[in-house]
Length: 229
Image 1 (tube, rainbow, N blue to C red):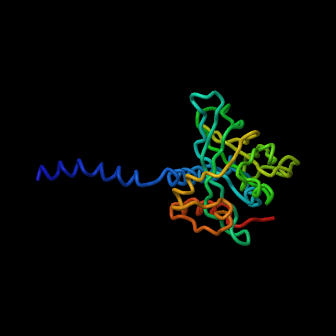
Image 2 (tube, rainbow, N blue to C red):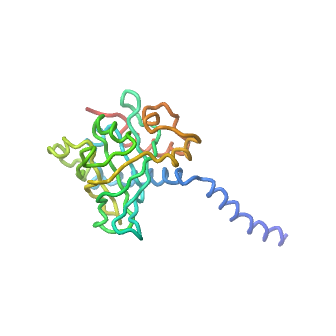
């Protein structure tokens, strides 16, 4: 009996490790994005303004964007772009993206920063579906306001195609992402969908959402299930 107990104690951690490792990096990022968005929107006075979220065509979530340790000023992150579903109801499957460079708000502390973007119109969405988009050059961008009921009708917010925020060490604030480039993350898409897929097809609803995305889609619907004008 003692032998069997010891054997079980040795095998159980190994089985747990195997199950955990079976989850791909892309799936882990989906869970991190879900947690990030839920936490940001869960504090009303510090959240993305509800009227902006309801008017947005797409959302970009980049959990744990990092600052390079060996290249001064290098910044990079991997996340997901999701757009409204048919008739502006619900959300698409997640299309994987990479973000590189730009001013990502590390001045508010920490070597890792969560980044959230709202794509406010169809032209902004089309720009993000290109092979590479540079914010501030190819698409207009502005730091977003904070607070669910914050005034969000200023000229800067109304003109910008993309609004951006960051969170580090619990502080959530609008930031400038001037100069950051976004491009499809083909490797992550391959992990999620088991084949090569185009981001344009994913956000257009031509690709079924993977099971791992169910939680993220659910939390997006919780806070904004339908686009408003």
